Image 1 (cartoon, rainbow, N blue to C red):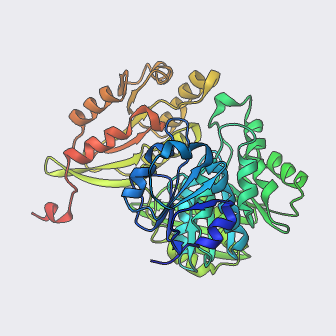
Image 2: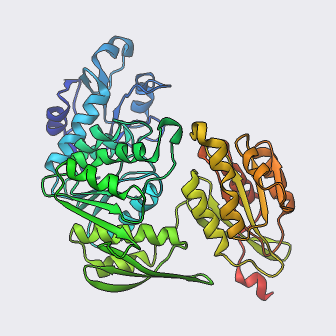
Image 3: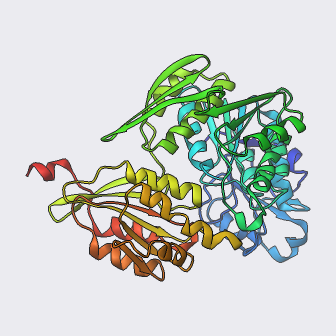
Length: 477
């Protein structure tokens, strides 16, 4: 295994006090004793619910080469004979190691934030830039006060491109994280009503996202969505932060990276874009106009870090949606198949509209229906009833008649759709799951969309468990 950190560099970065026989180096970094691999260092972080020190012995038994522990917890570790680095604060030691990783790296670094599309855009950047060089990117949605330094600390010294997702629920969360990352490009996907319960307006959300500009390296670039109503707020905030190079993407004629056209036709998705003064035709591996808009941001960021755009284009053609973020399944049922679109990872008003548009643009089979299976959007605060009821408009515009909904907040949508014949309401995800498992038929297209903690992902899991993947050979028989 390749050494990620020599023991000397690790001690210097964390200011740790070594105890026991030190390894020459470590091959990786973990904060989870269950998934640690032999040769990795275990950082015993104290979280909101669990304290990593309680699992230090398990981490060592599972192959940890080294434990990073707090001085104050050392007496409680008793007779544990593992090699240890003792520090004042374990999370701060991880932050210090992350900053050291950034200091030693010559990688071009892109930081991504936004109300919608952060993880999808980050994954598209990972996939596209991999065609141009070695890429290190956040795992899953590691975008918070421990996920960002962990991702940084894991970045190999030879990385060519670093891609970091940075999230927030409140003001002052992005600021310290982006100052660790120090990106060359700060990308804001869009501003929408996510976590609206914690803010008074979309402008307030924009200002919190704009903290990302404060960490840009000198001469760095801000990349903003020109189609978003908060573009002006973000542009002004970038200038106030001293950013000299401000770029935009979108359909707006003034956008530097411009979406000229997008055509979705029977499984074929093609994006036409203007990038660097050239018109590009890009077959898209993942469906949906919102994915094409994310791809435009990816092309812009790739251009700004000097990546080979032709290689990036070719990679986008093979990009597939992540689980819970638009991944599609064709599942066999009663001699035919139905199409499942898994959008169950999370939801807010903007991503709900994108999912509804994705359903609209997917053609059902003979006799099939377009079915929207929707659950609560959480963290909407006092705006909750309004934003749920407003989903009636895009559903009507998309001519989606079968709307199967569940959750306390979705009562507002049920009332807004009271005259529609195809509306089914259940109080929770379990009730909706029972309905879905009983009522689907060949030709149907069903999208499942809800906030993560509502449990609607269980509906997707239940469908994948009950129905086998459909093969074209079944149709031939």
